[in-house]
Length: 266
Image (cartoon, rainbow, N blue to C red; front, side, top):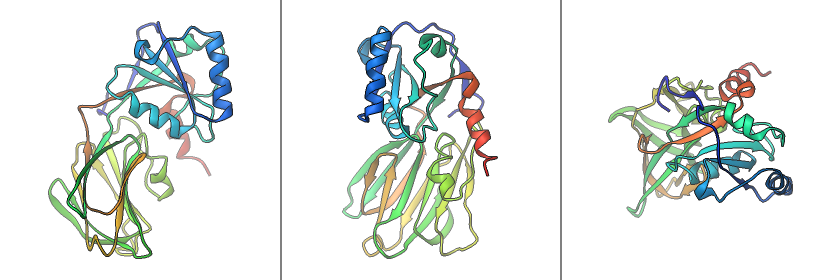
């Protein structure tokens, strides 16, 4: 996300809508009702994609339509639905036209496995490194080419975007990051050494490199949202400014307000 440009008001009237839904019965039922009520077109001809499901399906949709120029308006037909608007069949076009837009630049993960093969994947929420076996992972951390941690013994480590900071990052006791803040969260997962390190906030344009120490004996996987690469030896993560996707949220229940509320939950 570009600092200071995370939020904008949609100024063009929506003309064409495409609907897409997860496989769960409540999402499929909602898809049927909305298609009966509103004109719809194939995704390739749509201005806006209306997504019905949970956060996982929303993430898959965002990845699918990155750089498409189409805005994504999600409605919750899943469980948590943090990335989604509340479900309603009333005045859908009016809601979309009044929605607040969030332009998201995903992270790009470049991983090298123990066989020397290169892998690339994108993440809108987070990139995480996780131990594969009973043995703790040993990982060194470099920021913009400078070694910041020689060795961390842990279950793993992750780097999260503001959009993903309330997910796995929060569960690992990482900070919640407001949209447009221009930072990323670097958060350890169950660290054993150093015990007191709780992570760091990094500039959004930082280049973060993880080197897995003893990668064959202490195997580690790298996960970028829904893509997992097993047996990695080195992982580099940075913001990909060549890719973007637009999320739409209702003004009265926008994403920044959700993030603010999340920080005061007890």
